Length: 338
Ligand code: FAD
Image 1 (cartoon, helix red, strand yellow):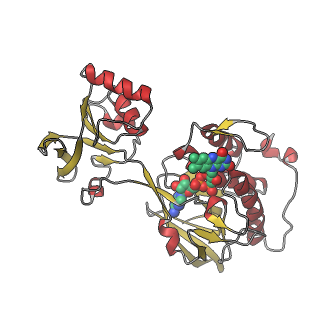
Image 2 (tube, rainbow, N blue to C red; image 1 turned 30 degrees about the vertical axis):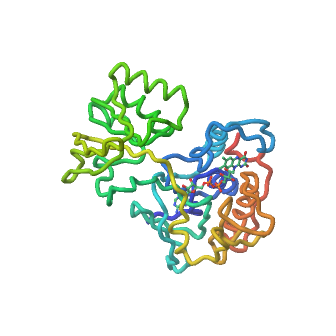
Image 3 (cartoon, rainbow, N blue to C red; image 1 turned 45 degrees about the vertical axis):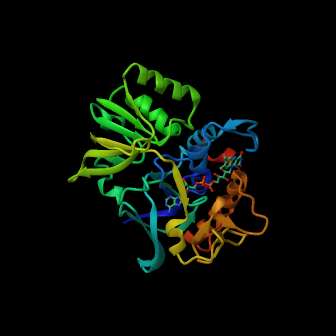
């Protein structure tokens, strides 16, 4: 079981900046995020939108902001585990001392004196097809909710479901390498970027992909992996069968507090109560920073989260080195940054 100075739950902007502040004090971190990429809301919800209220940075897109944070923490000691949710936190005794142990959805376990919950509005969970019972029984065996490796779709019969940017982008992209791509949507109107929709429609005209509207998935068949599906045509009510290797359901994401509700920490509506001296929760050694926390005057802004985690890291240091003075120095004198 790996031990670290700080376990950070959530790799949004505030989780990432925690690594920087911890690094300044010589502390290492393990970050875990449910998403397949770092950046939280910035990367997932509005990567192209400009942000104007980061001090000293007049304008930056949200993705540029995430990239800058990743560059800023590069000199420091951290590891990041993506596409994994933290499900469990429990107190344990280790080498005669009290620690927190966490367990992830991939059954990994880590221990630390300090847990930083930087979970924003909760973990983003992909929306499942509503009318299919337990589609996850084929997860990674023909059913996916995100593209993790383009190679996987090479020479395969691929069905993509959805009407937003992801569905359109991947339809266009995968049509270059798949044996066949079929885009299935419940109506013949798309929410994604117009120029990608046009690209998709041109590919349909050139017979490089198939578009099925208004259709919906009706059933998935297979033993251990998907081998065929049926689709329902809304206009005729006909059920049609197709051979299929890979299904991609790109219906967007739901935000869920999920396991946080079970961690026995004082909550106020869907936020975690903290004291504003060190952003500790009702449990010693468990901190909540960024959008997930609650205190009088709280603003859900990146800037506020940066302040909060800076103070929380000071307290984390004291918990690891009780009685020692927290080293203070301006970043100019930090050898890792030169
Ligand atoms: P998040 O960015 O929400 O990241 C939290 C991460 O934790 C997520 O990736 C989630 O998957 C992960 N997570 C949650 N639970 C778990 C778990 N159990 N296990 C593993 N991972 C978990 N703010 C500004 O300052 N300026 C702006 O201009 C601005 N514009 C915005 C525009 C929009 C459209 C939106 C929606 C928000 C905007 N915000 C803006 C707000 C800003 O995005 C948030 O304040 C910021 O993202 C909070 O960062 P965070 O790190 O606390 O949480």
